[in-house]
Image 1: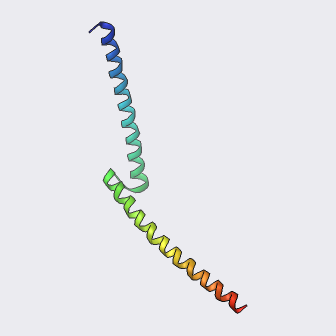
Image 2: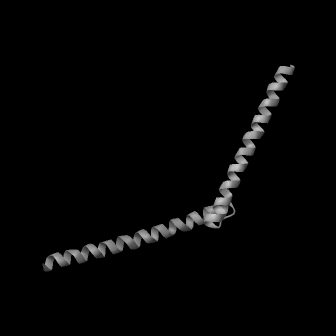
Image 3: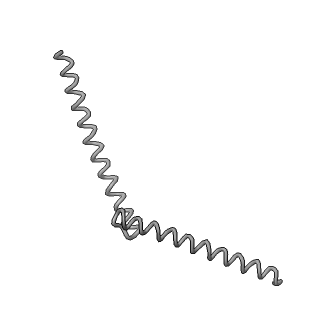
Length: 82
């Protein structure tokens, strides 16, 4: 290996280390945000939280749809009386 090739390889290694460190820093920021905003410390906890929120969303959408149907029914009854 020539000295120039060795230096290029060294630079690539240093660049890769820098990118790795930046990625680690970004992940640390995301983990801190998860902890502060959602009380989650791990990816597993985040996935569980998402699953729970999705179930809640489905339940709430069902309730909303039921209430909307009841409102529409009541409005139709009011229109029929008028």
